[in-house]
Length: 331
Ligand code: NAX
Image (cartoon, rainbow, N blue to C red):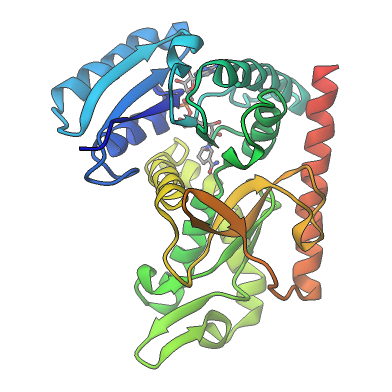
């Protein structure tokens, strides 16, 4: 049998954590033949709740779950972890300035970066979920220089999956038959959900989404804003932000990264920009990627029309501003 993989979930006593840890323990993230040891971190005010989650994990008697570490000590939490899913962070509260929220998260991600760098397993893969996800990931990268930059990513897979879902609803086709949408840029309302290269599997072979929908006004308008605003729509309906879909998408992100993307299919991941598609290098930006042997690569050579170009640039601008704001918090 394979050795258990140690998976860290920070913010594990929160909403997403509560949905995510049972998925990991059931093999949704790493496969039904891969045992896991869960490391769960939260802050002292949530220690009791965190212990309750640990009790439930014991009670669920997951065959794949070989151990649980539940702690408020970041060093203990990071020890030997192979995968780190960073869900914990400081939420924006009503009336708070953007800079104050950024400053809190910069300090959290700076210190957690150091702990990961010092204590995680070599080649640990990191996924940042907590908002501002792209910029938190960038801070983590900056303060964990010995972790390869290719190992630090942020979650835009939820947005990607939301885009697949919208196309599938619109065309009344199975979501599993839709592929190759792209989320470009920031996990924020400036993200660009792009269907230009997306296809649907039909009895007549793969057909472009644009051809089947045959309504560019919808695809360039309402579709984009629906995906961009979906998080707010969930909050309005549920009074809580998305949790099960975020947890499920985090599993998709790690699974595809580790196990590989199916042939002919790409997914969206927030990764360190190398300047592809004229996106400024040095930002964590969501690109279309394929994964193989545990490594992602940005899909190259896709055509970008003028409409898309504008949208790619706008979300890059926002990320550059966030980066500057984050750095001003460090000064
Ligand atoms: P919750 O507030 O329910 O949970 C967050 C947990 O993190 C709490 O238990 C809190 O005590 C803990 N925490 C705070 N500071 C910590 C620290 N320094 N170390 C460890 N734990 C810490 O929020 P939840 O709904 O679970 O959302 C978590 C994060 O995901 C938020 O930042 C949210 O904005 C972000 N999201 C990101 C998404 C994405 O697609 N990238 C989508 C869903 C979600 O909105």
